[in-house]
Image (cartoon, rainbow, N blue to C red; front, side, top):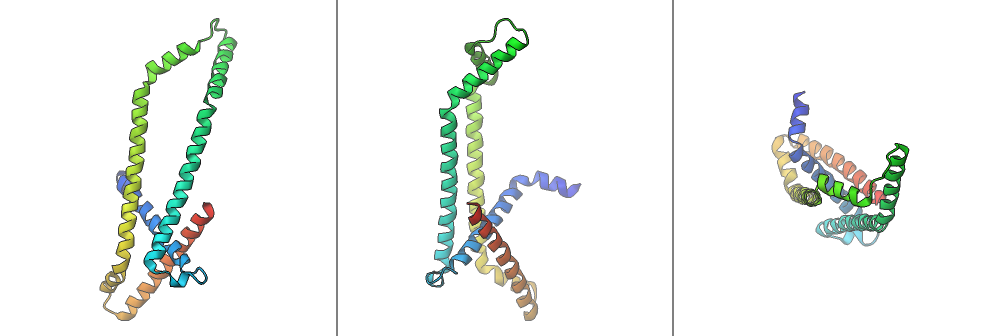
Length: 193
């Protein structure tokens, strides 16, 4: 029960850390795969491969954002048709229930404005979008820190054990795990886009 409670209470901190670790693995995997591009890959510096991976990820996010915006624009263009369909359904249900006078669109709109409060709804939507952007910024920042930490990680591993054979074995195991996870995430990300 206690671990579940800790995870629930700490989710605002733990989720961005987990997302940033996944993002860092994807960047590392894509950078590693960029090094395997025939003729060009071996000549790219690691920094350039990381930048290339980041540009590909940002490009994919941009394309997804454009697709979502196009879908929203399509829905907004069809909104009058949806409104007519909903209003027609409301009037049919009112007739089926035996209500003599069906509600008018003006009555429904007034009821909606009185009960919901459009300004408050828009404020909540704006707050939710700001929160989403803040989480995204934190995830990117954490991922940058994780990628920067990668340079000194081997030295920290060496401090764990004084035996050089164990240090090499530990670094090899960690590197193998990291390579497999980052390759898997990079390939599934590229296939998913």
